[in-house]
Image (cartoon, rainbow, N blue to C red):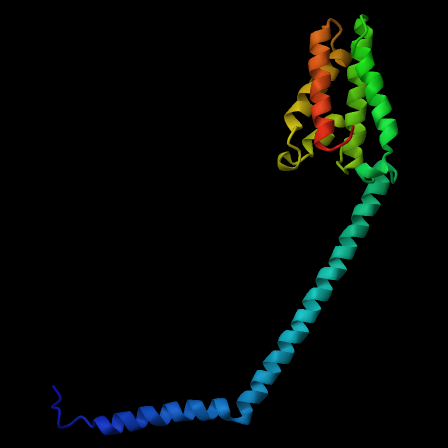
Amino acid sequence: MLSPSLINVVAIFERLASYIYGIIAYFRSEDFFELANLIWWVGLTASILFVGGIVYFSLKVSAIRKERDEKVFGGKVGKLEDIKEPARNERWEKIKKKLDSDNPSDWNLAIIDADKILDEMLVAMGHLGENLGERLKSVEPSDFLTLNEAWEAHKVRNQIAHEDNFVLTQREAKAAIAKFEKVFQEFNYI
C-alpha cells in the first residue's frame, strides 16, 4: 500500500486542471466553431431534403390514389357532399313510404333500395371492393361507428336476394330500414 507521503495530490490536481483547461480551450477555438458550423449546415441541408422528400412522396401517393380511383370506379369517387342532398332525401322518403304499404314486395324493394344507397355512400367515401360486402370489409371499425348495423341490414338484403323461401315481415323490414337510417345519419347522408 502506498503511503500518503508518496502521493502527490498537487500534481494530480495540476494534471486534471490542465485537461480541463485543454477542453475549454478547444471549445473556445476556431476549430470547434468551424465544426459546429459544419454540423449546423449539414443538419439544415438534411432537414430541407427530408421535408422535400415528404412533399414529393405525398404528391406521388395522391396521384396514385387518383389513378386507382379512376381505374376502379371510373373517376366517380368524390366526397359525400358532392352528392346532391335533395335527391338523397327524396329517395329515402320513397323508401320509407314503401314500408307503409301492405304489400310485402314493397318492403323487399325498400330494403334493396336502401342497400343501394349504402353502397353508393361507401363508394363516395372511397371504399374499395367489387360489391357492397367487400366494401364493408374494407371499412375501419373505428371510422364507422354503425358498421354492425350496416352489416345486419345488408344481411337482410342478401336474404331477400338469395333465399327463395325467405319471407320478410313488415316488422323485420322496419327494423332493417331503421338500421340503414342509423348508418346514414352517422354520416349526415340523409
